[in-house]
Image 1 (cartoon, rainbow, N blue to C red):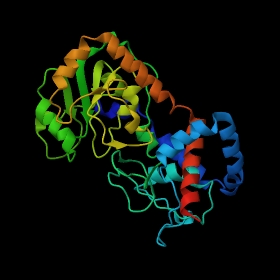
Image 2 (tube, one colour):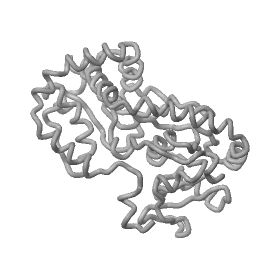
Image 3 (cartoon, rainbow, N blue to C red):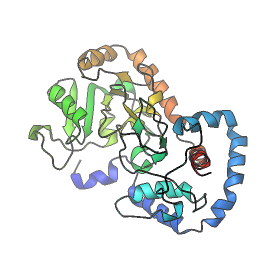
Length: 322
């Protein structure tokens, strides 16, 4: 595909409509939202059930007791729109507007790979360890939450593993390319416009549809999670990856190897073995695809996603503002 056409046909969410919607929401009165919060929560709990909602809310927000924030914690009313972080601003403001501007909170934008000292709203967190201070919200969803609506049959796809993504400054991906770039079972390419990597690694970008011609799609973590995992798991291809070390709103920590994806060693040493095995075992592949597709369905109910976001924040403010 010609480079100038890629943004139009890459299969990803379009950022311009998202930003327009964000600005319109930002300019609308917040008082009405605050008056509606109790009604929205009561109606949502009645529709989905308290026990069902609590399981996901408590996964995202693991705080179990009151924690007083430091005096330096900013108020919601101090939340400011900046050009550099406008996506994170709009994704938090969408739900913050339902709460009093006097409430205090902490938030971190971007790829968060450590656990903050105080309870903080984040996009990503380490899966292992005591990560209760990392409270997950559905952030940068315009980039991360992309799903496939149509696809070709698994049997019509190529028996190879494909990867397209940025490699520079991402050690896990660099190690993978060092070991498997010339592997005949792989079609690999770095799509970064610059960076200190071998020139032969550079390849043109592939649209999602072009990547879906392959049975196996590599989901190698970059700074935190691999952003392609959501659309892979909603398709008729299979994600191939080591067990994840980080998670987001997608709850990567709940994914089961061999059920939702094909697990490879963290040193990538068994990639050939796994690709060759699953290429010969179609029924096992179809079972993984079915389970992965079913897993992604829970994130497609926008009304439920909005309700969960509000409940996660309500729990956060209840336990940190007292």
